[in-house]
Image (cartoon, rainbow, N blue to C red; front, side):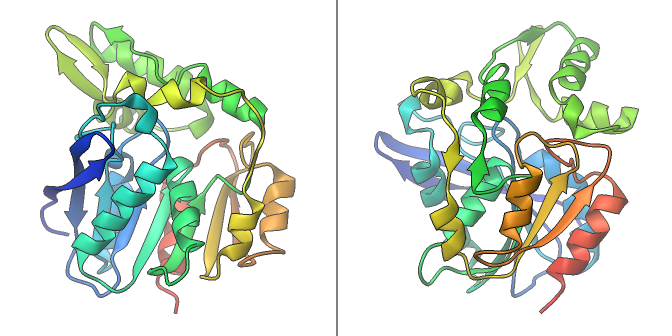
Length: 283
């Protein structure tokens, strides 16, 4: 697939500019695939998927949402939210220089994709939504808030890997190599310790409001591009009845469920990647 190219662009928030980092691979293609990660994750989650899509001839761009990975941190933590994420993603799409883009979004990334695809005159050709939908039960949000925004320190990689295996056990039965990769790409060095590779203040906006179910059905009904929904069969965030309704209203999505995992399918296994790749290749 060739080398992975790392780059960034400068985006604007209410309190100033910040860097938005992204990784690009694959040959030139008229419709890039833009991959957007989950709430506490980063662009490296898509390393395996990006390599597969690039080998199939697609241009793949994986972004670090602001406050995560190699992207900058916002001065005001209350700006961590979807208005900022949408503005940054729109700026990145403009940077890519293509009239259309496919989006693969996991959890938060799927919501970003859905919100963009609901806008008039949007550039989204195809959208893959990984284990999220227009209804999110507050119980699932409460579970995520149990760890989201934590700032633990780890003395070594083994300790950090044990943490990730516990926090993300719903990803399913990953191999030892997959857990190690997920761990190593989730950390930053801080002296003689390791810390999570995000701004721990990203959780402040969620903690500042009363927990409630999230209902985004009007947004879903405004989406008109083809949509593929991926669901972990044991997911507590994308409920079976929500996924079923996503097939019947709005863009009338196609649905694929993966056994043996909950929230969210990690997209590290060929059995999960192949149907996604084939669907994106459709017209």
